[in-house]
Every structure is written in C-alpha cells, then in structure tokens.
Amino acid sequence: MIPRYTRPEMAAIFEPENRFKIWLEIETLACEKMAELGTIPEACPKALREKGGFDVARIDEIEAEVKHDVIAFLTSVAEHIDDPDASRYVHQGMTSSDVVDTCFAVQLTQAADLLLKDLDKVLAALKKRVLEHKETLCIGRSHGIHGEPTTFGLKLAGHYAAFARAKKRLLLAREEIAVCTISGAVGTYATVDPRVEEHVAEKLGLRPETVATQVIPRDRHATFFCTLGVIASSIENISVEIRHLQRTEVREAEEYFSKDQKGSSAMPHKRNPIGSENITGLARVIRATVTPALENVALWHERDISHSSVERNIGPDACVTLNFALNRLAGLVEKLLVYPDTMIENLEKMGGLVFSQRVLLALTQVGISREDAYRIVQRNAMQVWGTKGQTTLLEFMSKDEDVLAKMSAEDLKKIFDYSAYTKHIESIINRALAS
Image (cartoon, rainbow, N blue to C red; front, side, top):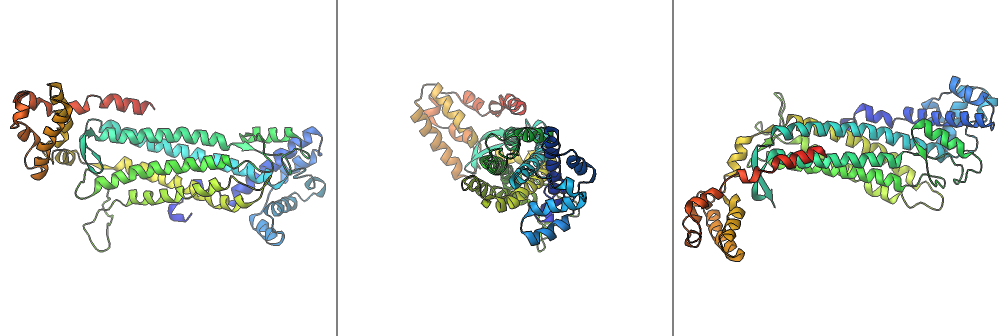
C-alpha cells in the first residue's frame, strides 16, 4: 500500500527483512530437529544459529539470475555460513512451500494480533460513547425516513456489538490460519520426518496442517480474508451512518474539525466528513481482496503457484489497509462531536408522527379493529405531513370523532410520551456491552 495509508508496525510484517528472518528461523528449527533425530550433523544447526544470516540485496541479485526466491535465499544463507559441510544440509528434504507457506502463516498471525489490538481500540472508543449517550434521545430512521425514537447510545451499541462479533471472528480466523507444513515435495513426508514439522510448528506457535499436499490448503486463507472483508463492511456501516448524520440538513453528529483544518480549496465554510469517507473507500479496497482469496482455493492437483502472486499483493494490502482504517475509526469515534439539542429538534420536526404506532396500538386496546385503527391514524398522520410538521398528530387525533368516541383527550395525550421508547434501552446496551 502507499505510505499515506500505511502504519509502520503492520508494514514491517510484510517487509522482505521480516519474511527472510522467518524463513531463516524455519530452516534453523528444522535443522535442529533433524540433527536431534540424527538425519544431519549438529554442525549445521550450530552454524545457522551462530552465523546464519542473509542479505536482501544479494537475494534479489541471485534471484534475478536463478528466477527462484527460495534458492536465492538459501544461497545467501550459505554465503553467510561460509561452511560447505554445514550449509549443504540446510533445507534437507524440504520443498519451497514448506518455508513459504509456513512463513505466510506466521505473518498472518502476526498481522491478526495487531488487528485484534486495533479492534480493542475501536471497542473501547465505542463503549465510552455508548455509556455517554445511552439516554441521548434521537430519531431512529428506516429508509432514511423518521421511524420511532431511540437513543444515540443504542445506535452506537449496535456498532459495538458488530465489532465484538468481528473480534470473535478474527480470533477464529487466526486459529484457522496458524498452521505449518514441513512435509516435503507433495506432502508425503517421504524425505522429511513428521517430527520435524511438529517441532517447527510448536516453536512458531502453529500446529501441523492436517493434509498439506505441497501447500497449506487455501480455504484457510480464504476464511482469513473473508473475515477481514466482513470487518471492513462493519467499518463502512458506521462510517456511512456518521456521514449521514453530518449532513447539513441533519447535523446530529460531526467529525472533529481541528483549529487549522481546511475543508475545501474553494469554499472556506466547508467541514466535510473526510475521515469516514476515507475509511468507506478503504473498506472497498479490503473487500476487493476477498474474491481473489476465494479463487485461490482451487489449485491444480497437489499445487501450482497461481495463488502466489495473488497473496503477495492481497496479504499486505488487506492487512495494512485494515490496520489503518481501524485506527482511524477509533480516533474518529473518540473525537466525534455529538449534538443532542439538534437530535431533539429533528425528533420533533414532524409534529409527533413518531408516536403513530403507539396511537395505533392504544386504539386497538379500546376496542377498535386494527384495520380501522390503522386507517384512523394514517388519515390524521397524512394531514401532519401536509402541514410539514407545523401541526401535530396529537392536535388532529384530539379532534377525530372516531377516536374521541373510544378514548378521552387526557388518555390520548398520555400516549405521546418518549419514556415508552427508552424503558428497555439500558438492558439492550448492557447486553451489547456484555458481548
């Protein structure tokens, strides 16, 4: 990814230096177990631990000639060891995928660990704002149109629950991808003892792949990238909500705008939701990695390398981008400006139409059929729409003879009470936070 959307800690996981460092550790661990089993001399792992190293520029130089990155790496390592009697045993009985796939598993688990921390930041920011605004009344909308009252805290609690689910999914995806293969050319262990794989897996915090053929099955990777895609969609979900709430006609919430910030090169008055727009776009980039990951599952026979070029791109791109987006989202939520007075103003803008269901239900309770009750409420509600909220539903209902025949004006007035919509809010929020 471009530096603009790259955080150094995540980027470092996918840098050549880290990749070759992991490759060297895999080769060293494998040699240590082979020496213990008597397959190779002790001098080999000893030389790797004491002198093992590599040079990225030299690997690139060799690869340009041999057209094989693992061979180029092994040549560079041999040059560092500078002992033919030791270096000739490195990679004994192993195939390139044993190193490359096991390394990729390590990199993705490292990335997952960072992303889990990022999710914790988002959850912490959301929890704070949920508790702050659990009683802040606002309108709930369906189809973009006023529905019924809710609270801003409950709005945010829904997003909190989504990211809590995201964390659970990512933990499972991390477990899914944390596998190792040191099983030889087509995964039969014909040239390498299975105990070598067990040793390498244990030391790297992985577990042996059930059946590796020559590669780790790519359904595991597909699961991982699908999980990142779902998290990206949850990011977009809250981002779009913030963007809508910041619209001039709504302005119930707004991204923080710093003292020296500029909103437009042409219009000095502008305060745009650039943070949430930015991560809405980045969510698209992350989801774009899902389809290639799914298509990587179908490889020829025991393996081909059609997945390799894909993963060299989508591995860094998805993880780096999601790392940036989650951190930006956490900061956005922490500093989000919330306007309760505007929320109340918007809530009351349509003259109490938000109480229509309560009136409907109350009429059925006094003996009017649901069909007739719906007709009565709707004909009065349409008149409120006609006055653009300048009159209220209560005013019209209080003059309706069909209503007054069954209900007193005093009982009718009691229906128009916001507390009816908030009586269960706290228990819902507590349930969400407990998730």
